Length: 121
Image: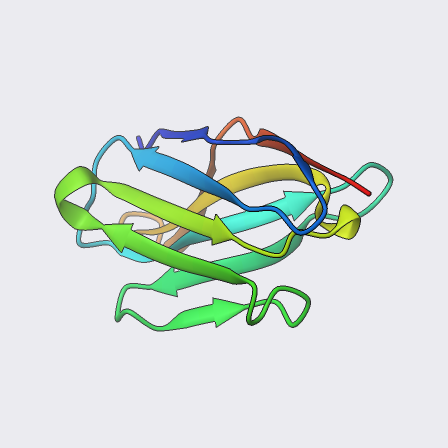
């Protein structure tokens, strides 16, 4: 079982910055990718940024140039540095880990509980 715990959300004015952290209970060689998604009220959950097991980073077009995802394997953590925040970034941000399960031969999604980010105009 993989557990994810997020922190770092809060209220910030437009143009400000926040740094989200996600601590993973354990890192395994079966990790396919780890990253961040977000869900705003009345909207579908969407990808924000991910890091693959090979180190490739993937960003949503709406956050490119403003957000940066990074990881620290020694701390079993992944971070999301968010700069130049906009009111449209307001959402619950969720940490996600995609882990390959060799028994059932499929990728399993694990989710944190989420952290609220609110950007005021």
